[in-house]
Image (tube, rainbow, N blue to C red):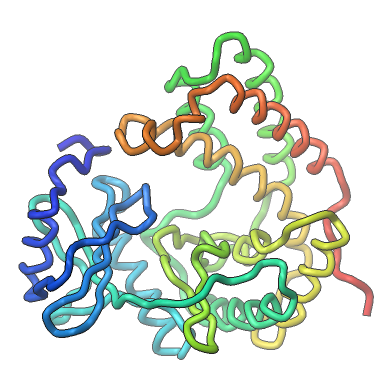
Length: 325
């Protein structure tokens, strides 16, 4: 089985896997929006709705996945709303035909509104509660957010892919190297805690009247600001107001190191470059050319050259600061 392939994960094999842990589907499988893994929702004969997640082969080790699960249980025990894996006979990680998989309760909800200050206030408290728990231990198996993976490795993956058009290669890699060098100079001596890691609106739900975290798949060690900055949008003034709202609410539950505000633009640059590298690395998976066809278009790379130039300028600007009291 290719490390990028889910070719053997047929509907029958999915149902067989679920039945191997004594869960019997009553409805058909509904594929949910996930490209890194394969995720399906279904209703079982017990009347409950479940989500089954099959992990991409060779991405995480069993120990790394179980560490993610342990973090979810720790948060749940502290009454931090999070969708945690279901245990069957004391186990949360299962294997069938070479695929590792986990079962979750299916949780419905409405989408989080990133431009709503009242909702950002609620989210700031929730992240503060999560981080107060997170500081109580460290990941020993999960990686740390760093320049090697997010910048250097991503660049190598792009170069190996040969997807950057030859007519744009010089322009693209020139600005890419400038952004990488500047980011490395700013992202140094960073204190880390356990993080959600991918804390954007798609991974936060209103379940009833409460916010809830979903999908800890990208959990890792990193600076606390990583779980906050992706909520910022709009122009600088809007971001200042959003940041002030988030941090004020966060600090009701957890201390925040204000010097980490200078990491926002370096982390944004790292996410941009890491995302391109991720697409390049996964291009062998047939789902990626099918769903990200624009990644092979000249226009996309022209846009990325412009985006990297804009990000390079942002890296030169003074960092965001909190509003004066």
